[in-house]
Amino acid sequence: MYYPSAIDILKNNRNKENNSHYIMLNNWSEKNNIKMIDTSNDFFKNIDPITNYRKNHIICDMHWNFNGNKIIAKNILKNFK
Image (cartoon, rainbow, N blue to C red; front, side, top):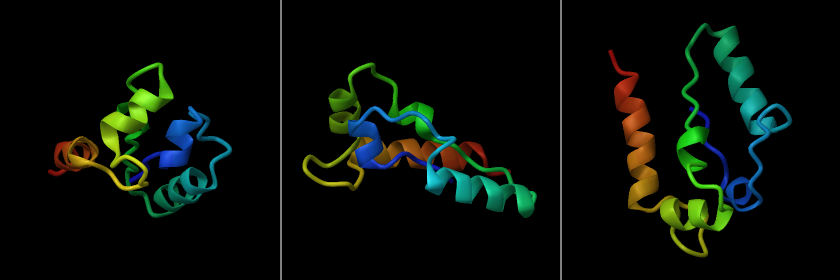
């Protein structure tokens, strides 16, 4: 599962192609023939990066708040079979 870091969200960095975390996970997924869940669109819903961060993270922290955890849970559950 890929999710953008809090720093990526605050910097409004939506470019996954140069993101080492994304590249590593994508390569691993392809090599192991496992679908990678990409949650980045859910974390970049708003144009304003501060709003995106505040809506999904504990303020002054890199950890998700309740809504951020809901994003992850929703993406995991919709991919269960």
